[in-house]
Image (tube, rainbow, N blue to C red; front, side):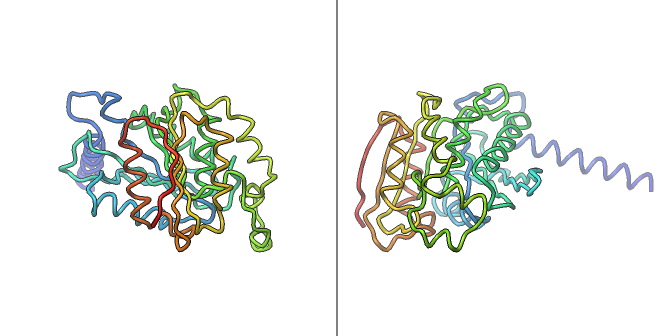
Length: 283
């Protein structure tokens, strides 16, 4: 029994070494240049692992744009369950994707933002990520915006370099029928006159001047309609904002994170120089 106990300790110790070896080259410390490509994906209201699952598979396997390295699952109590992935041949400078999944996917923007802060604090403390990009779909865009406004302690949290909001209703959901079906804290926050949305507008002056933001919408989105998506201009300064509206009435809300045009917009923005644009993309 003692021999088996020793073997178990050796196996666990080897696993820990393997995980940290994936993130750090031996004898080296990652520079900001090496880790700036860590991108965190945050799903929206009632989202699941599938919300960004297919996009991340395309990014990694179809396009070769990087690899999914971490998956964080957050319990309703705010506890973190972390899974580490990585190819043995992966280079420390490869773009890294972090997939965040909230078990309580109907919580308020404020609570979800606090859970996201726990994830990013853990990334900084455990893996020394000092810079990240954030990508959010639907309410995930509101959560990431709330996070950037609220959690700015550089000693505790990574700096946010770029933020991408996909199909995010910054002025709320205009369809009243939507709220006859949905009755929970998240739905209350998505009402056009909610305090949560007002807070995002009131706190616009705390947004870092270095933050660059991409907002993507579709004319076919009946949840985050173009006018509501465009309300991000009341939060983010024009010089820091890239605004993309896809003119395609067949591209609905949930289809946005499954569309190759959106894939290319996200990738191009995350890997481009800081340039502001305001475009309409036709199908």
